[in-house]
Each structure stands twice: as C-alpha cells, then as structure tokens.
Image (cartoon, rainbow, N blue to C red; front, top):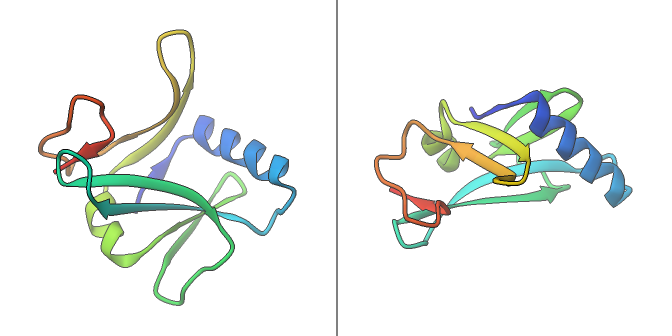
Length: 106
C-alpha cells in the first residue's frame, strides 16, 4: 500500500474540510495512459468497494483499488509547498521509467 507523509495527510485533511464532507476518502489510483504507459490519479471518493484497500493516516482515509495497489506498493505520497515545487508528488520505486513531465511512468 502507499505511504502518506504527515505533510500530505495534513493537506488532504485540509482539502476534505474545505469540501465540507468528512466522509470522503482520498482515492489514489494508477490508470493506463500518459506518455510512459501509466498515470497517477487522485481524487476524493465516497464509495469504497469491498475489495479496496483502505488505510487511515493522520485521520485521513486513503483508498486504493487492488490492481493499482500492485503498482503502488512501496510508493510514497508527499506534499510540498515551496517556490520551486508545489503540490502532491508520488515517489514510486516500482516505476522503471518516468516521462519528462513526471505525470506518467512505466
């Protein structure tokens, strides 16, 4: 399953509070596409399937579907807020190659 840093969990919690629905979970998924073969997808979801992997980090529910979990095993979701880099990033040891924009991998 994916590891979520405290910084990322704090930002996700802030965004869920802004949405006004504390029942939302952060869904992290891998989908076919992008210039390297796979791309990451993150969104808030209220539907958790029975076969989804669910983990709670710092009060935030993180959901991953079984096929994405295989590609995200050992990955880390982080959040940075600086002048050079801002936003969420996924460091994935399973990615053998990434594209120039950093949004897709294989």
